Amino acid sequence: MTGEAARVALPARTVAGRLVVVARAARAEDYDGVLDVLRDAGVRSVELTLTTPGTFDRLPTLLERYGDELDLGVGTVTDAHELAQAVDAGAAYVVTPITSPDLVAQAVAGGMPIVPGGFTPTELFSSWTAGASAVKIFPAGRLGPDYLADLRGPFPDIAAVPSGGVDLEGAGAWLRVGAVAVSVGGPLLGDAFRGGDLAALRARAAAFVEVCAAEGR
Image 1: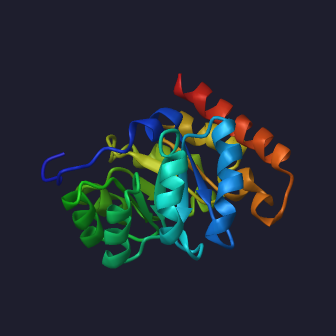
Image 2: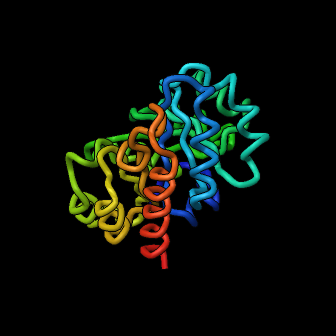
């Protein structure tokens, strides 16, 4: 569209997998065991949230351990300092729950893929035209896949990632109406970060990977 800013593409693995798992733990030391299971189940993109204490301190170790197999993004970025830290730390992408053209411009200038959140057409279009790599429809569970189908009428080129309340059935439905990927937290992770059954986590993750792969064919 005329007037759009430059845009940094999302990582190829994230786009190919069409699934971003949002990992929100009580502490950063809890990431490793869950990431092992997600990786082995075929997940290729994980958003590590800044609501988890110690995420930036833990990120270099996680990148060394998983960076060859997983795109590790940083989520819940809400200001310029956090965004700069994510760039410096080598995150694969950043996700923010807010609509901020200034953050988008900062990310683009730093060569960092960014996915800002929005709820209304005005918010989503504002981020997209500012140069967002994709826009996060949040909270997606309040809206449903038909919302994206409607948005693609006036905004046919917008790349959208629904987040918040996306379950297994919803993942397929959102992808069928044109989502570039789905962002999934609780419905996939369940109680994994609270000592839950990791075999059950692997089964849930594999089911999401299968659905997203099927809709990507």
